[in-house]
Image (cartoon, rainbow, N blue to C red; front, side, top):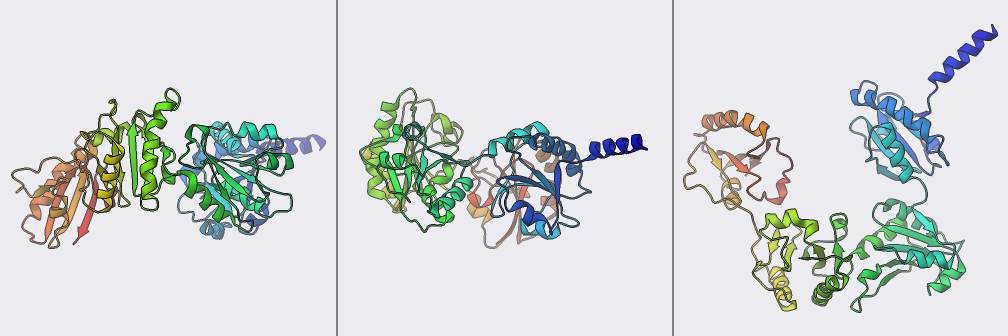
Length: 446
């Protein structure tokens, strides 16, 4: 009998799960006090969920042994967790979300195998803001090579909690620190309760303060986040492929051989000139400097040589249009100011990459180019079906005869146009947001 009991225990232990099962009744109590927890929202019949299950289980077993443990949980959206899934906007399975309490939620964007899940969650765990406990810590923080933020607090200030929430929300974009150490606060020459955004030393200039102060001890997390995002770019920040969300449009970007590692002096030579012009257009235009190498693809699409020593300027509008300064124009402060003013005065035409329209466009399927898009597709007398395609795309080639057949059948319908556009050779108007090459089509009712 004793042997049977031992065997039963071992069998039960082998099937025990380290993934916490949650329901509508238990979700809030289980999640609200967690520093971090990964939750999978699933459906039992979902094939992708079944494939994820063993990897998720392995990850949970490893992460429960982490110091501190990082819990993994799951919610059945078809049964006891329906309301919770609805509350958090779950529309597909499996959906994974990282929770830090109930109000700080972010989409999980990591791998779906156990090793990747473990690595991702370990990187997300821990405080989103590092504590500075000494003046030495503060001095080290000042060596950080990008924009960073420090919260200076006393123990009894409620804004410290709001700052931690803001830091958590923006942990992928900002390096955050905090301190309650009196020596650090004194060394920084600040007042307890202030939050300060610092620019990296490579961007120090006489034309702009090296730090920005936020001084509202009653502020909420959302206000602190706005302060951080609104002040990231500064007068003419360093635009990279990773920080574009902090540069508001309309935006004038000056592209050149910017390299703060090999040529910091030369990089700031042009940036200082951009900043002097930017001061004249504050509140009207955002300015930035960027490396040609970082944006080689989109510059080449506009006929700008990325390997040249030329300095080039592009204004990006709020509508997604691009306005290119003529590459033959020699860059100067006067030339930049004139170009930006002409944009604001609506004297510039947006740059469009376009094929030349065909001389004969009488076929049942009309050929559209960037130059003819407005006249053909936005014809108020026609309903238009347009296909955006890539010549090399297998799916597009497969569709072509069927699409031609459709055009033939509808060629005599006076109020209908069947059209196509090579999206690799022409700029597609911003509203249509064409991505990929799988026969992207729009029916436009004019």
